[in-house]
Length: 364
Image 1 (cartoon, rainbow, N blue to C red):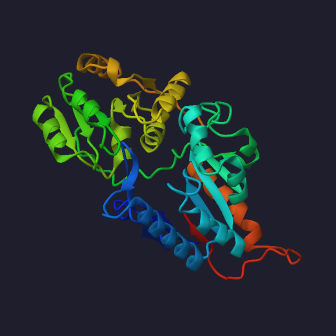
Image 2 (cartoon, rainbow, N blue to C red):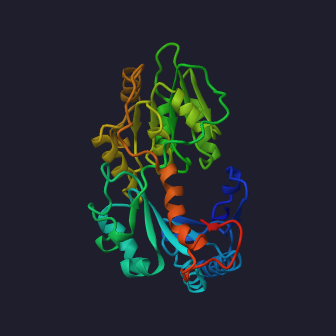
Image 3 (tube, rainbow, N blue to C red):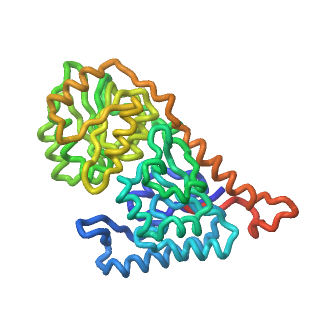
């Protein structure tokens, strides 16, 4: 198998990829109070959309993937992927999949996003399957009204992308025992990180705070200036899973990737979700707390004193998360193989056959 990962973030190539895979980086977009805007280029947004659309058509047209997996936005931020997908399906044979996190947003906002990209009819027209990266016994986005019932037959729940994440090099950057706080990318994590940095620690216990690569330098400096004794602040951490597993307790925001990393451990966790822009993190935290896999508290009710007490009370305790479906990293390749099987290994009577020999081509 060989593949291309298409991303709009310049940080993407810093992540390890398997052999025979490579990156294509699109000109980036970012959210502002008025909606999406170019991240770096000084051009009108419509020009950027046209540029991204042309690049996507070129990638799919030249690479001719057997499988395309689209993350979250069915046709792109501003439908710039739609023409490329239609052309790829017309040229065929190809299988297309929409991959979704287990929580999208509160139902009204989620359905509005579906309608913005053309609604369920367009999704059924463009995709062969929808992979939902979660456990419906914890949160069912169809039952909750975040995904239209009419696409239900396309849905496969994969389980959380949790178990099987590589632990890293095996070298801790902090001495045990320690607590850990992480705020995802860090762009909006300063409030929680600052509260964690001001938290008093019991004697002999350290505190590792991962501020995130997107936290502004002045905010990072502020954390280091006001951190209590025994607290270490880093902006990034290569071996996140290793350090999470070694912690006595974890405080974190509620982004999907970080929560999956936490769910792969048995370490007690307090999730403090983002409460503006969208409700995704709040819904995720509340659902997992209701299932007994972690605890949840909003930042408006959090204080350094409460945080200190919570951390101390969790010393030496563990949480059993094995009842949750955590095997998404195993299940996704199985689902991909099932889709590719009739394309790459058709029987003699099948009209579906790949015009190309060799490795399967995948675009994500």
